[in-house]
Image 1 (cartoon, rainbow, N blue to C red):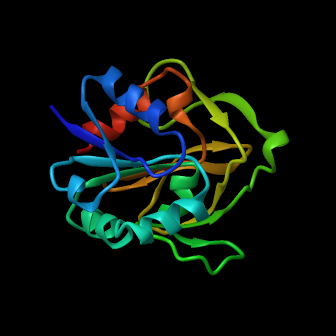
Image 2: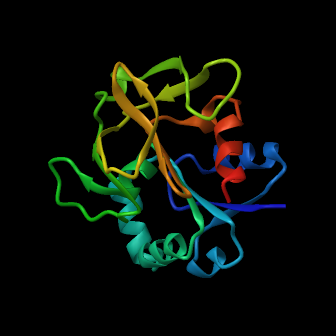
Image 3: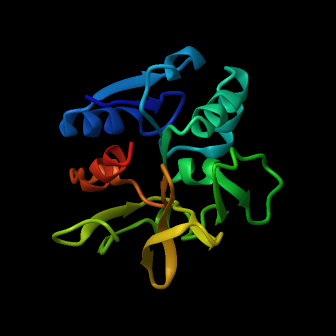
Length: 188
């Protein structure tokens, strides 16, 4: 059975833990670097990326998560997690984990009042379109050559992956549909 952690410093932690449990995998709330040792994968949830970055630095998780990914472990970044995993944030000098060769636009779809839901096709998922929830969502402005675009909304990239790094601009944990999480777990 796979063991999947959720960075539990801020953001949509309980929703991710519940979704992981529904897949049959073991869910772990991660607050300390030593908790990463036994994990197969880690989810960086939605929330506020600046706050999450500061807390990751404070609790010695920033470099530990980079090492975790470099060791071949999986990382799934959703919304703010997408921002944190990127190579670069458009228009910002904020430090990122640099886990996937993307440039992201923070709050690219607008402010809170511009949040929306839409069902989209996602490469690798069979069946009905996947329900998505975009809340103050970023988007992926550009991807490197080795990054695979998995989904778009109005020709804007909202999901991508490279190896065991998966990122989405939306919140899959809020939908009740675990297919995307299952795709991540299957890659580990």
